[in-house]
Every structure is written in C-alpha cells, then in structure tokens.
Length: 157
Image (tube, rainbow, N blue to C red; front, top):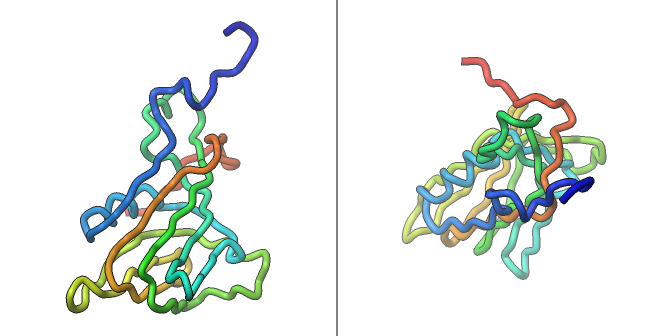
C-alpha cells in the first residue's frame, strides 16, 4: 500500500456496534461515551417511535493503538428505545451553539424492568428518559479522527 493511508477497516479495531439490554450493559456503554461531546441540536426525541437519540463525538477509549498516535474521536449514534418521556435540566435547546459533554449514563430502576435512564452532563446538566425497559445501542457512524485538542480528557481525582 505505498503512498496511501491505512483504512479504518484494515485496523484490528472495527467500528463499535453495541447493544444494552440491562443495567450492566448500560455501564459498558457509559464508559465508552464518557467525555463524548455533542451540540444540543443533535438530540432527537421521536415520541411516536418511542426513541431518543444523540449524535455524539466520542473519545475512542477502546483504542488499542493510542500509544502510536494522537487520541481519536469518532461520531457515534447513541439511541434508546421504549422511551415514554424525556426531561432535561440545565440544557437549553434554544442555544444552537451549546455543546454538551456526557459524564455518565446510569439506570434508576422502577417496577417490572421500567425506570429512568439518566445521562449526567458536565456543568450540572442532565437528561432523564423514562423507559419501559433498557434497550440502547451505540454505533460508530464515521471513521475515527484525531481529537481536535490532541489530548485525552482529564478528570481530577
């Protein structure tokens, strides 16, 4: 392959396409989307389809080659099915320039598998999804790209 860049498909790491059907699965997705950023305009709530989705720019925490190159991000769709309602705190969808950052995703169980999925955002924001049951997917939809900061986000202890 002289003179051309390696392709995403040639790497050992394939794009993520994961599902979560319980709280333990959701913890895995939470770890993978920690520090993901997204414009407030990239949230979609489809009440009739009972679906909530975000288009995220997530850090590739799973990247095994990060010692060889700068930290990478990839655009991913995070979607939740069986969503009955959506509420938010500290999130203004009117600000078209507002960029939000995911800290964690957790499940607060109710009765019979129902409960609330809570996306905690940096800066005291949160999104709460009332769900009949956990059904989430995380799917990478672009090739990885070098993180604009060229750094991995840091969290004070």
